[in-house]
Length: 456
Image 1 (spheres, one colour):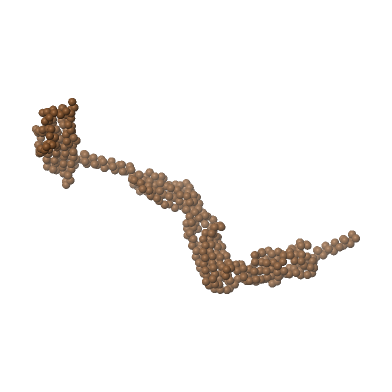
Image 2 (cartoon, rainbow, N blue to C red; image 1 turned 135 degrees about the vertical axis):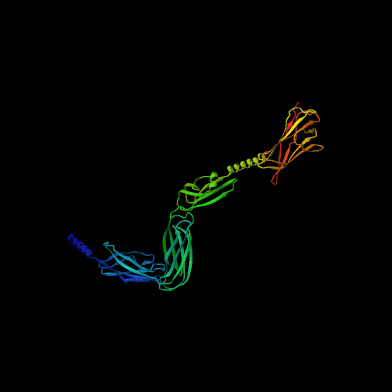
């Protein structure tokens, strides 16, 4: 019995060793048009009863396998089908797939390479895609492309969709309609886009899709990179100030990268240099600021300020000095004073002197010195020129007339007062005046009002 079992096992192992299977396909190469159906017949032949599993390398969503497990009897054949229905959007060309068949009994695995050629009667594709412009924030770019009928049939009512994306974000999109397009004909399109300030650096994607009769014919994609760069923009804001200038220089980084050691210059005149008290330093006719760091989207404020207050004070002092010089020094000066200092008693005599000196840089003409004596005094004269006298109820008006006063000429006019009554305390006399002409202009000056008499 044992000998019989050994013989059976030996014969089984010999049969297994020489067992074999083969794979054949029909047709040799499948040609199928997009939008239409096709099939590949796969036949498995075996010298031994076995069960086989079938798998496809290079599987596409538009593949369908009729069976994935096939049982084949010894020296028999079994067929199955691979069905294909490429959509209009399937790419035109040759697809190379691998057909794998594996024996479940022996584990033997065989592969057959098979070619599928997809042909497209209806195909419109984007070609000649070009990008023109600077690829960085705040710049404009134009994207031009042609839609070409690369199929064998005329196309009508073709829809074109354009997308510009950054990662998962859709930045812009547009649609175009092509009424009719013969084979090999093309239609040109151009898209424009402006990168926003602080647009992110990195990879951007252009996508162009074509549709015909509601089916996607093709999709085209192209990548490009936006530069990493800092973009410095300055604006000026003027603030009203009295006696000066104040300007705020706003420095903004519209780029997508941190700006470091940013140097900003603003011209300044030689005159404003003297009174500048803002930020920054002055170098070669410019106010220069250095900002250590400005982040994307951030703004730095720089102060430009000129203070004219010292100049204003200086000019005021000059005006005051000139006024004093021309109206207080370079004039005909007049002084009035009382020589005696004593009590005012009846019949006492007081001497009044009026000193007049021409400090003008030229001769003065039509000089008139006027004075007034209150009615409580009598007026007398002993020396010097006598004035014209005019008596009123209030007192006595005195007027000395001189046709000319030479430059630096000085005169002393004297008269006497005699009180008609006694007065306790002091009395303040009216001021004397001098009027004169230099050229066509008339000038006038006053003396102080002297007081005299003593308190009891």
